[in-house]
Amino acid sequence: MKKSNGTLLLSAALALLAAADLSAALQQPVALGSNSTFVALGGTTVTVTGGGTITGDIGISPGLAFVPGVPAVTVKGTIYSGGPVAARAQADLTLAFNDAAGRQTPVIVAGNIGGQTLTPGLYKSTSSLAISSGELTLDGLGDPNAVFIFQIASSLTVTSGRQVILTGGANALNIFWQVGTSATFGTTSIVHGNVLAAVSISVLTGATLNGRALAQSGAVTFDTGGGTSIGTPAPGSTGGGGGPAISVSGIVNDATFLGPVAAGSIAAVFGSNLSVGQSGSSIALPLPTTLAQSSFLISGFAAPMYFASPGQANVQIPWELAGQAQAQMTATVNGTSSAARSFVIAPFAPGIFTVDQSGTGQGTVLVSATAQLASAATPATRGNYVSIYCTGLGAVSNRPASGAPAASVPLSFSSSQPTVTIGGSAATVSYSGLAPTLVGLYQINALVPTGITAGNNVPLSIRIGGIDSNTVTIAVK
Image (cartoon, rainbow, N blue to C red; front, side, top):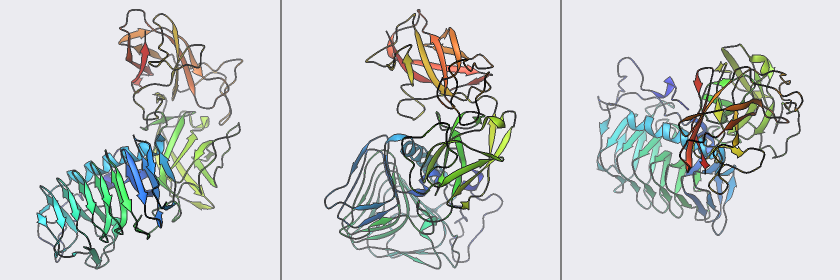
């Protein structure tokens, strides 16, 4: 998702704090997006051990390995091992990491900052940073909304037994450690805040992290030592606390995780506390408008729902919103409603689904008249057809009711004809419209050009109404 204006430095002059260094500018929090419900996010693996309790959601992407350890830890949250929720969290982590790293006019710190007292602001280390010779005190100066951001070019190390102490109203929610490599918290140490690491995070035996451990490419490992070593900071930052909230720019095309969306299409909604638990995998048709005590109202129309979890819900944008340029969405969970979130509705918002649900790589493209992916194991043949599954192609004939499946007879044809490009060449389209018996899913049947170069990663994209889709790959022989 794109960063909102709320994640940027305050415009106008720098607001100087009474006891702060004169170069320390007042900061706004780093927007975590869908990571607001996560306590641990790893690129390869999340390993927990030592018994006790972990409070918050756990995600792994693009890896899949969640290792519960011995003794196993009780996780008060949802574990997302791969899949779209974890992938979205990683995408939002990249935005948050870049936001924190890009803040300007920092106070320079270096080496060991143990024994110091720091006030709200932006701090930067051009190499590694340690808390090793004493406790680090973060003084909020009486402001519970005060923000601390640490830009660390290399590693962050808190040695065994050392603590980060919060005074003056400082809140772990508003502390951000942007770490260029890896963070290590020694045994029985205590740290507060959101740790955004490019590589890995290790919370050693009995250490306490009152915050989030979010790692981009590597592993998150923690050993509770039998206690509660890690948890999202209060208030209301896990799926079990606070009311529902839809993230800024959190309403996106479910195939690409980008905006805008089109009427009739499948959309993903990201936020926090969007449901009570997670909906099941089997949903009856027509789609319900309530799942897991969660419902969504879009400009007065109840949205049909495919899936609901605390961090993400998938809905159909009602067909009735065709022709509108903007709409407002409100989430209601267990009787409590979120603030309304505005979003753009476009006539066309083409997105091709992918196998790993990331929006790139192997497309959800079948060898025509089979259930086989056009992948390396079963490539498409030049001169034969493939079926491309996508969403956001706009108006159709024989339009079904919102939430209802498309008919097989007569078919629902796209009102506008898309163009398909495979391997750099135009492909003949024989059908474009809704996939029969399904909701919000479009199907395009296209002839693989005979003159293209065969391979396992042949690019494929579509264009409709002057709007390009994402580019996916297929295998062609």
